[in-house]
Image (cartoon, rainbow, N blue to C red; front, side, top):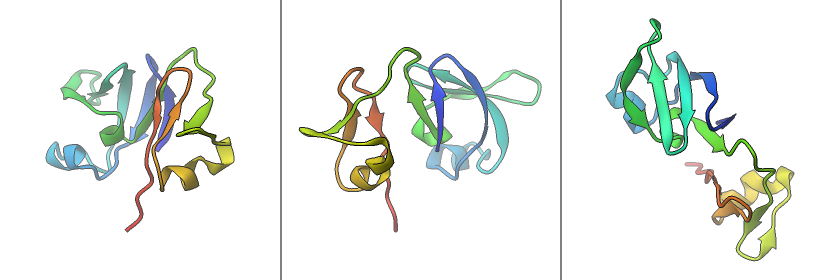
Length: 107
C-alpha cells in the first residue's frame, strides 16, 4: 500500500482488488488523484477512467494533508513501527483526524 496525501496525484501500480479486477486495470500503472472519499483513476491520455473507487481498492492509504497522525487501538497508543502488527489484530485509527490504518490480512 502506498501512503498519499488527500488532494495529491500519484502514480500507482494498481492492486488485484475486486474493483480493479472488474475494471480490468489490476496490475497496471496509472495516475490516481487521491480524493477525500476515494481515488479517481486517469487513463494514459489524462482523462478520468470510470468512477472513483475507494482508497483501499486503489492500493492507497490516504492521509489528510495537515495531520501528523497519533495512532491508537482502543486505549493503546501504537508506535509507527508496530502499526502493521497491531492492525492485523484490531482496528487502528488516528485520534486526531479519525483516519483508519488499513488492516493487514494474511491468508
